[in-house]
Length: 296
Image (tube, rainbow, N blue to C red; front, top):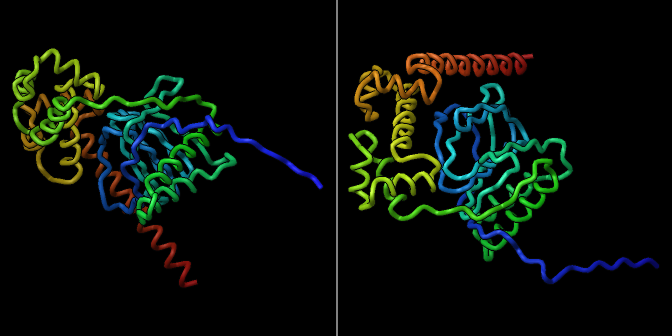
């Protein structure tokens, strides 16, 4: 007879002061535009199937099945799917924490394809718990999230720590909401100071501390996001787009767009149209191959 006895330390406690606020399962089928956006919470993005690209602050990274992307709060990002092998993925939103990586970046992409752990299991389990909301689901989700994080520490060579994330003040959050909804109006830092009842220099400092960008730079970036959406999905002229997005002139739009996107607005529209044509062409070719295969 053999006997193996294992002991567990009762002092071990959970270390994450986090709130799980969302989980979603998505599959890209060409039915929405990929527009850069940011969150006030940390996002975990896990690729279930397919291939594509992940854009983070104007940097582009290839992603595919079993890649995990962690994006800290207030970081602009989006995904672009491959037309032939569309992305299918989970996203999990976590408030109250952020990740401190050893390379000092606010994001990290982990390749989990060759690792001996099924991280997808934890994403599936979290999604199912939030979907069913059975008794005790909140506690189960939080424990699953902590296990997922500990497993990730085992798997990766890129050391990281989980740290509490700062929450913006009520005034800064109100200013951000105002900029998000009123970007088309003429807005100055003095206007925001009056709106928030704060000294403009203090407001700029606090806003930058919480969101990583000054309020006026945030406003310009928001306007650029609106311009990109209109360039992708409308036939408006660039002068009209500049007006709708809140730019004082077409020349100011052109200057800002080139600064943020590295190309002119016209070149961006042309690039998007070519990309859509390629996706349509790839989809038609794929459909033709399936039909030929069926006929055989």
